[in-house]
Image 1 (spheres, rainbow, N blue to C red):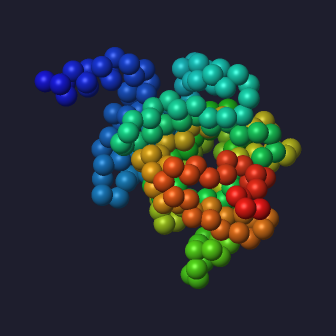
Image 2 (tube, rainbow, N blue to C red):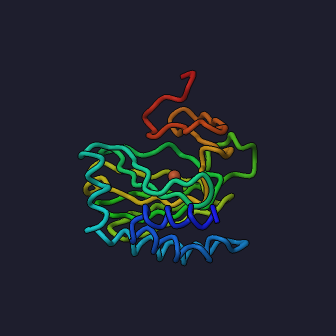
Length: 203
Ligand SMILES: [Fe+2]
């Protein structure tokens, strides 16, 4: 009964709000086409639980960064992310489904449309959303090119929950640099640029 023992250990170590999220997304995430609306609804409910999430926000000690809340080797992963004031991420994809929900502040979420030419072409801006507390967004490959973060003068930088369908660092992904027009394929283990103002390797 090693499996049962391991499962019991996980259940004891995983906080109740996270267990609730994982239970709520289990069926929607295992569908042949993930039910991202249901997943986003469950994630937004967790994002509204400020009493619980305050302990994770405190781990960042007021600084930009990210903290893994639930990171198994396989299956959905949850992290808390706080980008710096006035900084957006690189334009990127994830190679797996994504749901995000804002806990505090304002997260600007911009979607881009892939062009029909080579992957190196800079995708075209398609949608801009400002996500306040408990607002959510979802992404499903291949329509998943985006950047997100904070724009100067647009409220306080957000703390967001990011729920990914798998460990994205083990997948093939892409990132683009709007300033230079460069594109880069990210292989397993390459986390890419966290903010767009970081230079691409080789620049
Ligand atoms: Fe992203």
